[in-house]
Length: 185
Ligand SMILES: [Zn+2]
Image 1 (cartoon, rainbow, N blue to C red):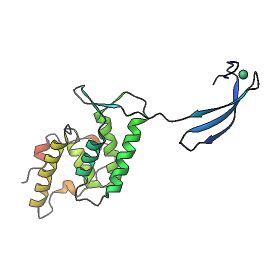
Image 2: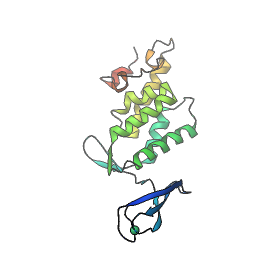
Image 3: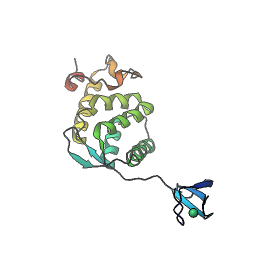
Image 4: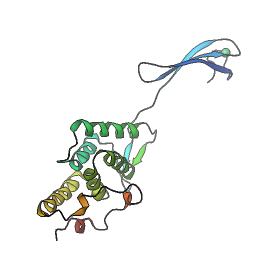
């Protein structure tokens, strides 16, 4: 940090404290001219564009993100508040990276990370469909199929929804064909 008076680089920090608006305020002193000044450091937040696999970009869509998570959590013991919390966390994660765009896959991975902590079923649902999660409508249609399959399976033989997903390795292995996965035998 250069001194604003003599332009010297030789300055030192006298003290640092958090300021009200989530920034950090530093009191500095110039070792050359003795000038005292303060600086404020704050986290930059600008939402990036989301880049799809085909290279096209869309603006970061909070509603779409929220809807996708809501769908994954449908009929699960996850409160609206918890969902909102995840949306906020992902928004903050995306907004503070300092990048102009973020791959859609990385957003998907963040969702997976949060759902994994929140609810195993929501997590599995999301992992199963997120690779084709190009539109919320598509996601919704797939989930409807899954629910249908769950209803038909009265004997609870569908282990997919009973097992807690593994911590490593399995996380990113989606079913080879999503349609087959939810087929009712
Ligand atoms: Zn100075």
